[in-house]
Image 1: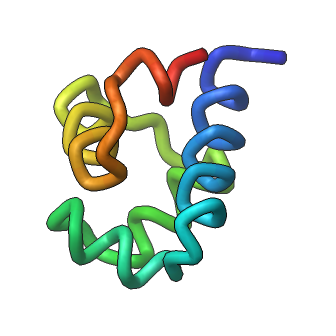
Image 2 (image 1 turned 90 degrees about the horizontal axis):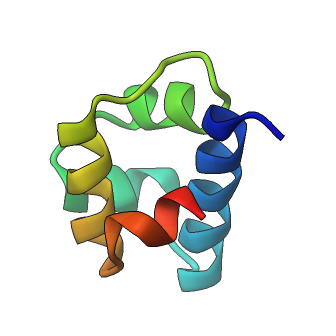
Image 3 (image 1 turned 120 degrees about the vertical axis):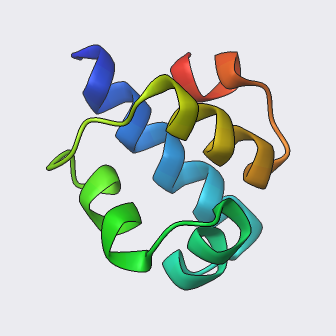
Amino acid sequence: MAPIRRLTTRLKALRDKRGWSQEQLAKRAGISRGYLARLETGRHDPTLTMIEKLAKALGVRVTKLLE
């Protein structure tokens, strides 16, 4: 699986595991729900800063998103 695809799959899985909607995670990460949706579907490539924001919002290390 391509690295970006692993990231998008992991992001959605971690969000679902917490029972959060895209809106809830987006609010915690300080981004729009639409942007998060594009990240989860692989239509947008996140910057390292964005990956860090998402990891912090999810309460995990960056490496957890990239495994």
